[in-house]
Length: 258
Image 1 (cartoon, rainbow, N blue to C red):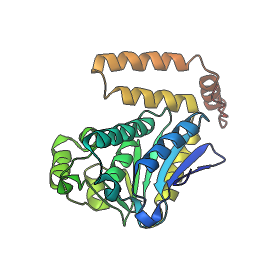
Image 2 (tube, rainbow, N blue to C red):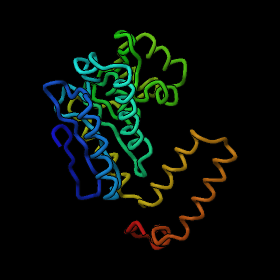
Image 3 (cartoon, rainbow, N blue to C red):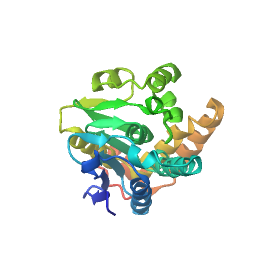
């Protein structure tokens, strides 16, 4: 991989870093394809959580590489969007929790990567927004679909229609990010959250993510039925016996993901 690095930590947390600092980690076709390939690779290793971040302290992902996009035909642009959708789906629908460590600029495709993650941590120097309409285009990697689900339709429409950039304090207020931390601390904060997740039963976390994702796709009754199914299935696992047994015996659980 040329622009995407993958690190694996001892607690089962994987860190995916987009490293194209000379372009503020901007996305071109190659970078988006590498993100998808890397996520497929790490998913096969059954991590406990995945963190996504950008190299350096200036930019998470500053959006798409406009110099490349400007020469695309309509069909090429659609293909670029489809490849982006496939990569974002690997984050959104990953069986394990995904965390965006937004350590700087997150515009356009960068904000769409963050939105595809389950949890977003932003450093105080982060700046976020959808500048696409100012270029005569629209967010094409899921922004028009995920932003309304995260911040609500009205706020999402304002951000997308105006192209306005927002600072971390506003992003926190509208629910776009979960936490705001000091400059240079986004990755460490994401690591802390990932470590908390990794300490829990891995099957329980995976099933819990599947259930909460299901809430977007089905009505309440169907969602509750799915939750009951997953709740029951977990009682057939060794992890459930270990977790509840450890609680009764007043000791730390040792989960094996079985």
